[in-house]
Image 1 (cartoon, rainbow, N blue to C red):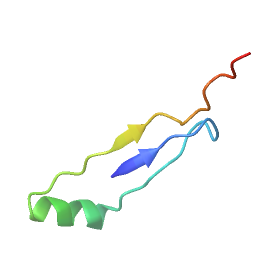
Image 2 (cartoon, rainbow, N blue to C red):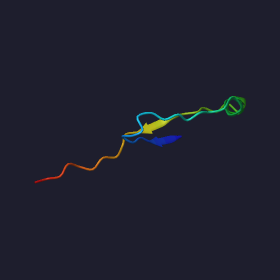
Image 3 (cartoon, one colour):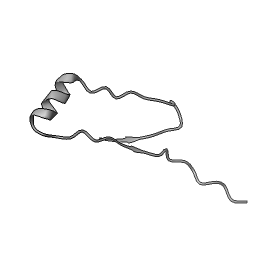
Image 4 (tube, rainbow, N blue to C red):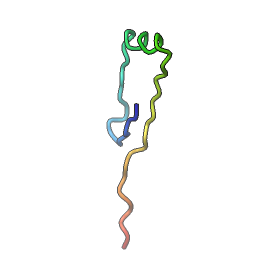
Length: 46
């Protein structure tokens, strides 16, 4: 699961239910989170 970060809100929750976790365990899967840094505009040049 990839998540694109932003400056606001400061935090976010992405709950995964017990049933979903149990299903992943039954099939031997992993749950991986990748959080990408927020995209910011490059500084203006004079």
